[in-house]
Amino acid sequence: MRRRGAGGAARPGAEGAPIRFGTSGWRGILADEITLPRVRAAARAVATWLGAGPARPRVIVAHDTRFLGEHLARTAAGVLAAAGARALLARGAVPTPVAAHAVRRRRAAAGLVFTASHNQPEYQGMKVVASWGGAATPEQTRELERLAAIALAGPRPPQVPVPGAGVDLVTPYLEWVLDFVDRRPFRACRPAVAYDALHGAGAGVLDEALRRLGVPVQVLRAAPDPRFGGGAPDPVTTRLAELRRLVRTRSGPRLGLATDGDADRFAVIDADGRPLSEAEALALLVDHLARTGRIRRGVAVSVATGSLVECVAADHGLPVQRFPIGFKHLSRALRDGEADVAGEESGGFALDAAGRDKDGILAGCLLTELAATLRAPLRVRLRELERRHGRRRCGRAAVSSSERVTERLARLLARPPARLDGARVRSVERVDGLRLGLDDGFVMWRASGTEPVTRVYAEAPGTRALARRLAVGCRLLGSRRRVDDSPGSG
Image (tube, rainbow, N blue to C red):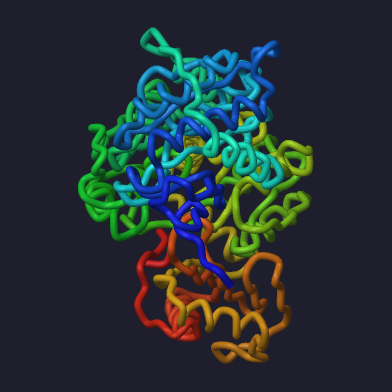
């Protein structure tokens, strides 16, 4: 099994190496895999793919707060315009969900967002949003890869200047969110919110939405910083110590929220300062939206998402479908009308009415609406769900990919165990990595499509059991060292 680098690049650093799209776009180290000539080639590929020229397709071009984001976005917009597309450059750094919303609202043919999401500061990348508001499909990205290879082999694509300060995408997005959120609970309760923007593009958007709802908000790490304070803009437990402390020391109804670098992923801290896992937060969102009549068609989740979400949806008479990891599969389910809400194990949530890609801004607003509705910590509702459906804990760990890890994963795929962590293996799925269904949860292994790591996902009946199960999963890969965690696994 051959491992790719971040973003799917087979051999970053070589100008002639192919441009590859991974689980969530094209990513790589800036000035190594991501260079101006390669960005021009990628933009030219998008123009050719859209049939730029007489058709004059409209393309939204945006960026987050990473190094050279504005320059790369202007470069891509100039290439698109030279090829005959109508490139609409966003004003300033914006969250990916804002750009995705604009693609649908403005009926654009596509959107380009320069971001590496939650990756380390030295990374950059490009996400392609299809006309229907979700990430480009695997079939579409394969065609983009083919066209990019042609552009790389040819002369430098022509480019024209893109004048002006850019188009305001944030105001229409906020208007839609504030119209969708139920304002009635805020008349009786306005929970104090602490929001950690992690120096990303969510600052000035999520906090502004909450302020317009009358919610008092204290923002941490709001200033744009391409170094993200010296770490990855990833809202995992180890990065949220100050947010947890701030929430814990306040009084009255309160909540902590965080978003990653481009604000498509979210994390939530309850009133006691403890994080909720992604599966717990998703279950709460599905339950709340179903109770208020805003879900009717069903729920789409990834294969690594915990089973509480499925139980909650079933309790409301909603079907649930599971898909491979990668939000593009869930986006397609929303597009095809198979579900009207989607979520995954890594902090991704989307509502078809808003957009078909991950939206940490909307998730934060809806969780605040739920806190105002309950007038109590979110765990009050979570305990209610657990009494009905059973207690479950979900989390993930990761180990650095190596030849040894790759060999161990291949061995597990070929000969999965009959028992694991004292539980019987009830099912074996190889759709996306290896997933072993157990009597009381699951364990799953998968090589990341965006980072040089192999991840272990697990569900267990309690926190200690989860930690043990994740440790067993890492040891079976021949490693005891974890390189990341998730909000619910700490």
